[in-house]
Amino acid sequence: MRGLLATFRNALAEVRANRASFLSQVVVMGVNDIVWVLFWVLFFRRVGSIRGWDGDSILLLLAVITSAAGISLGLLANARRVGNMAVDGQLDGVLALPVPPLAHLLVRRIEAVNVGDLVFGFVMFALAGSPTIQRTAVFVGVVLASATVMTGFLVLTGSLAFFAGRNEGGELGFHAMLLLGSYPVDIFAGAAKVLLYTAVPAAFVSTVPARLVEDFDPGDAALLAAMALTFAGLAWGAFTLGLRRYTSGSVWTRS
Image (cartoon, rainbow, N blue to C red; front, side):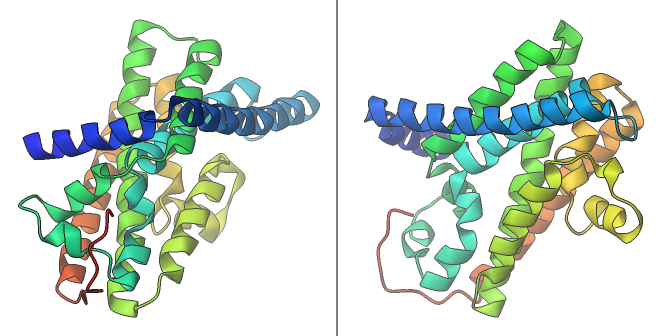
C-alpha cells in the first residue's frame, strides 16, 4: 500500500510540476462541461420534463458523471490505456516491480485535463445539488461507486486486447460509456435499456447514482455497490488472465 501511495504522489507531483499548464487544462475542461450543461438547461426550459427528468435532476446526473469521470479518467488515467499498452508491449516496466501490476498501473498516471471534470462535478453539486450533510455523504459514496464501475469497465474492455491483439473494443467501450452515461437511462426502452444495465453499465455510472442522491433507496444502493464490486472483479480477472498472454515489447516505459 505504501508503494502505491508513493506512486500516486509521484504522479500528482508530475502534473503539478507545471502549474500553469495544469490549471489551464483544468479550466479548459471546465469550460467544455459548462457548454454541455447549458445545452441541457436550454433543452429542459423548452420541454419541461421527460419521463420524470427535469432540469434539476439532469444537473445532478451531470455532477455525478463528471465527478466519476474525473476520478476514472483523471486520477486513474491508465484505465483507458490498458488496451494500447497491452498491444504495444508497454507493460514491461510494471511487471518488473514488486507491486500489484493493475493497481500500480492505475495510480501511475494522472491526466490534468480530466481532473477538471472532478472539480467541475463537485462544484456543480455544490451549486445545483441542494447539498445537505446527508446528500453530500450520499453523493460522495455514489461517485466513488460510479467511478469504480467506469474504471472496471474500461479495464475490462481494454484487457480484451490481450486476447484479440487489437484495442478497438477498448476504445468502443470508452466512447459508449461516456456517450450513453450522459443521458438518463429512462429515455431508452427495450433492448437498449437492458444493455445499459448489463453489458454497457452506463445506468450505474450516472442514472442510478443520481437517483440515490435525490431519493436514497437501500436496495438500489446495494445494487450499485454490487455492480461496482462485480466490475472491479471482472476487470482484475481479465487483466490477470491477459498478462499470461502478454508479449513483451522489449521496451522500458514510464507507463
